[in-house]
Length: 629
Image (tube, rainbow, N blue to C red; front, side, top):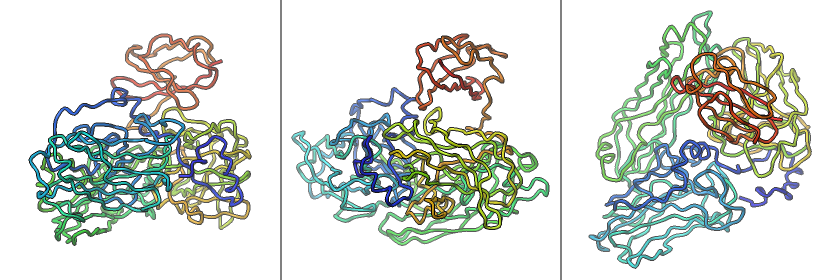
């Protein structure tokens, strides 16, 4: 990445003002790691001990959830296991090395040694050079994140029989652009009873920058150079939402309740299974499967069987299928007749001879033969998966950007949610105009506008701040609406809006206008989904299978504004039934404890704060906002 992008001055961004189009910038932190570290602080700064010595084969394809590398295989947790940042990986899931620590925040403001990924000791004492022990792996710079530069390095080191680390491989940031296969012979110098290897990246330590991705790390005997055979068949990516473009939409827009029929969805995703044969021989898939399950009502609603398929060695096959949503979906009458909330999990899996034998080998953690994703039917439209890989800024005063939504039934717009991520430099002193455009018979005009708003960081991490539309805006069925913002301050860096780079199908729904008319994000080479959501009056608020409610529904909270203490009067139940978290306007957790009758807040700085209450038994979430002065 270009290091000036993460400096607070952003001096050379003036060049981008000349080009006058949206700019993609790296994130300053990793919200996924931050959230995990906050929930599991005991797992952050760990010094894992080599409690056991592994035997061959050693293999990790990082297909599990993470976010840290598996503790039975790796000594450290500085690298980030994920399913979103690798671009066309050989197997679903990668491990990423960047400029952030295990808590998701930058190491320093400098450059140099950043992440380390060190394996547990492996006993190679019984082998000789003639056993042909090789280590192999796939490596990729950038992927769906920030690109390293020529001065950035990814290095591999072996620990030798004298307990010294030796460099055996290194690559610079400008050497490769996609996943490349690499292998290294493990010679006599390294055949000890405690052999280890480690990956190290050398780059900026200042943010979610200069990314390197690794996949399918394998150490085994009886191999040879350029032996890319892993004896495995695997998925290369997770399935898309059941919807083609959307990751979430209100149920009434999906289902015609009055006619008791599903709407004809132009956004139906279809079936698209990408399976990779990482073996040296043909592989016959016995069956390929697709299913959708309703998680709220605990029932299967859709099934598809694709039959067998033959995969050539080293090939990737795309298996497609089609379904009729009007007849093949089988929702319960409770869902079908009542606009409600639900979550649909879509799953791809397959059966193949020999796969079980591979999965049962020692040190193999394979979760790549079953992949899932979820679609939310709540009270909002969304194209994003809730995780930003980068952010988009409008690099010229007066520039505009918007996301297109299309309604299937008449509705009202209650609120607009925007994810504004933390980047280098505070942007809360800037301003923007929030706008809604309607396109009718080819003409586009503004139907709603709030001027000179300030960016807000939502409570929690990777969250969305909700801007209320008051009064709600009536919207007509079968019309296109565009929701977005106009940069109202001439400042660098520009106001960032989260950008989910995993939904390429949403690219055509993003538009920008620099004063000469609207253009697609595709024209600017930007592929993904702007993290802007439309909240409607239809549907039910959905968060982890729970309805968000106002805290005042169950607890009186006063005073507001507050100077010294907040008081909590529980209407039903007891104070000890709840736990409370308080976030400041920058999404930082400032207090977490069990709820008591009164909580002192005099030590908090003046400003806006957000309360999140959770009932310990029901896990119901309640929210409240107050002002400290």
